[in-house]
Length: 209
Image 1 (cartoon, rainbow, N blue to C red):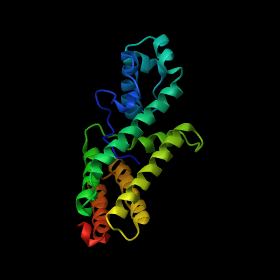
Image 2 (tube, rainbow, N blue to C red):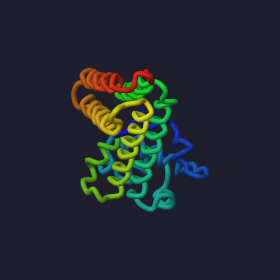
Image 3 (cartoon, rainbow, N blue to C red):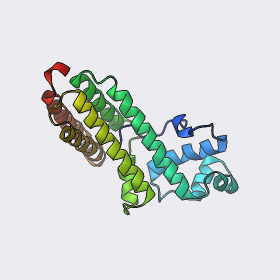
């Protein structure tokens, strides 16, 4: 699962630049990968297309990444960073159950409704790498675990009697909304997510409402 605006932004964020600014050519390659891997698929996007769309030479590509596999890992890592940042922004101060969970749901709905939405990038990546031991799958699994654990902490703060179970249920509902909305009916998917969220809010302690 991911909680972020999936279509890539116009620039690689500062968090994705790690500790020091990247060379402009490397930034262009990453931005191109963010767009093509998400829109077209990871395995369907070849190195030659990445090079052409990035306006770099083959030597420059391999200088910065060494291989497509390295670029793929950077792609899922950037998505992870964006997802974690978006989740924290939505959670905010976590003082009101209705407001906090409502902001998380609003963020999911905003993503689903965006014009460039092509499904969840983590689900998409996992589908292309069936081996659970593959580094890509390790990143997607670690991110999902992080989101579930973070939501459990939030539900604890909000006074839910079973915060871990509530976090699992909301995670499942969000994943279902992402998948269902892309494959079929986005209206029904969003409505189902809202119903689950409203029930979980009602189960939180009255002092947090």
